[in-house]
Each structure stands twice: as structure tokens, then as C-alpha cells.
Figure (tube, rainbow, N blue to C red):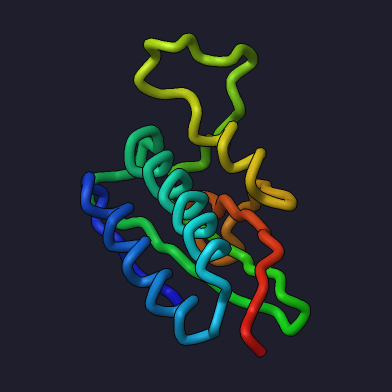
Length: 133
């Protein structure tokens, strides 16, 4: 699955809908679908809110499922700056700063890589998921 997303507040919603449809088609367990949607939503939101992309550049979201039940979620943008987990936990009234903490807590692993044929980066996360097969 590969989806091009607008750099707006609707980007994460669009990514979640596309991901849910794909995970349902793959037969991924419902509880794992919810976790995957949350992780992808955080990655997309982080890109839309914090990446300094040129105005004409969109964000791309990808999902792939390996035969051993590992779901790889990717969000690519044109910004070279790498996201970082905050050094300190955000306070209870903070409106942002928890996204990558959630990703780190829910994913088996996550990271950032340079895009091989373009400007920017890809932030990815791997999750172990159950399937009905």
C-alpha cells in the first residue's frame, strides 16, 4: 500500500483509512489494526506538523506485511531533519511531544532512513501483528 497524503490535518485521517482497508484485506487481527493505525497516525502527524517541507511537496505513507507477520509502516517527506524523541517527557498540559514516545512504546522498532532516490527521509516502524491465516 502506498498513499500520497496532503500536508494538512486530514493527512493522518486519510492514512488511517487506507491502512485499515489494507490491514483488513490482509486479515490482520483487529487489536493490531488499532495499534498500527495509532502508530501510522503519529508518524504522519509528526511529518505534517514538524517537517519543513517545501510547500509543493506531499507526504507519502506505505505499509507492507512480511510472511512472518511483521508490519512495516513508513512515512516519507522532503525534509532532511530527523525526528527525535524528546529528552524529557512532556508535562501533563503539553499539547505535543508524545508522538514518538508512543511510537517507541508500541513498535518493535522504529527508525529513520534517507530516501534512496529523493530529498528527505523516511520514518519507519515495525510491528509484529497477528493474522487470520
